[in-house]
Amino acid sequence: MAHSPPHMTIAHKAAFTSGNFAANLMAQMFSAYIVYYYVDILGVRPAHVGIVMVLHGLVGAVLNPLFGYTSDRIRTRWGRRVPYITFGMLPLAAVFTLLWIPLTSGPELIWYFLVIVLIYDVLYVLVILNYSALFPEMFVSVKERASASSWKQMFGILGMIAGVAVPPLIYVTYGWQSMGLLFGFISAVSLSLIVWGAHENKLAAVPAMGFWNAIRYTWSNRAFFIYVLGGFLVQLTFALLPAAIPFFTKYVLRESELANTVMLGTVFMTAIPFVYFWGRLTNRYGPRKVMLATIICYAASLSPLLWVTSSVAAYITSAGIGIGLAGIIVLLEVLLAEVIDDDEQRTGARREGMFFGMNGFIIRFGISLQAIIMSVILENSGYQAQAATQPGSALVGIRLMLAGIPIAALLLAFICFYLYPLRTGRTR
Image 1: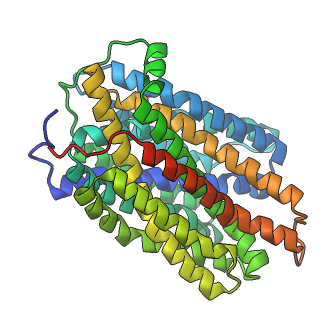
Image 2 (image 1 turned 90 degrees about the horizontal axis):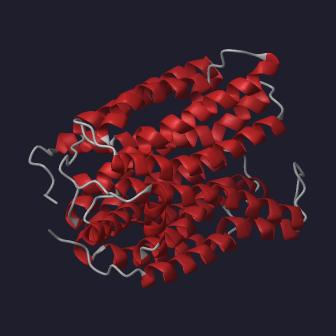
């Protein structure tokens, strides 16, 4: 493998990494508002929307390894990854827009929702998986990857903020359709910059193994198995945190919904500068050691949520959470790139697509596990929906969702990454 190409200027790196803004904007906006929009605004039956969302999760899980394998195996004169991004980005932005501009109404609306969500799943996985698979190929040393990941995650955090905090400011004043058009256009621009900044190694060896052999060989890679287990555990905490905060602010802090925005905003805004801090440490000490440090920092910063009762204390705690979270989101991609390098030494081929695809397959189930954890705790803790006050057992349950279970998951993740066998970065 060669070093990053000589034309990889700051502008090209910024253009390529800025694609993460669109990836996170679409993912967060879909996750936060799509059910509310179709159920509460458009009046579709909740049970029907729930079925579509289950299919959304299953289809996305299956598509990740399938598209990853296809991306690894099929090479065109334009490359393996870039063509999928080039031809898929504008249809993806258009379909994302159509999610918020239904072209039908009445009983047919649920069928429109089903079809458009499935098309969105296909295009999102196609484009974003290939975008992710380009990262290890474009940035080949620990130093390059730490720097590029810091940029990429900074844009990703901005996309999270835009996807969660900004939509109400738009749809309340201008309507949901105008919001869809605006964010669809922004996503198209952000995705288009990827192609200008991308560089693909067209000489990389193509793997010869079949689909099932590729899956079996991927899972037999000890470093990947440990990585994906640790990654699943830390990303489970990412799913629990924003989902549990509304219960915490309403029933523990007894604040208005504005407190949700303040807590999440504090987490994300603190994380932005610290992605560069953790990136520099990664370059100096290597990804494994720094990952262990970030997990300790993240777990320690969550612990005050087990007992704090004031809003000020909760906001200060949120700032601490952002510090640790920033390091983890930077290092997850760096560590996976290291696993892919190690696999290349074993197989003689670059298999980024399959590794990112299998990782995406597993991570999809974190959302399902988050929903199961929350439903079990709420059902068994005495929680009463819309009650003015909750019993003490329910408040304990809310704190467990927000901090107790995430801390336990992080301790298990620490063990995984302690056992991670690739101990030094490749410093070419």
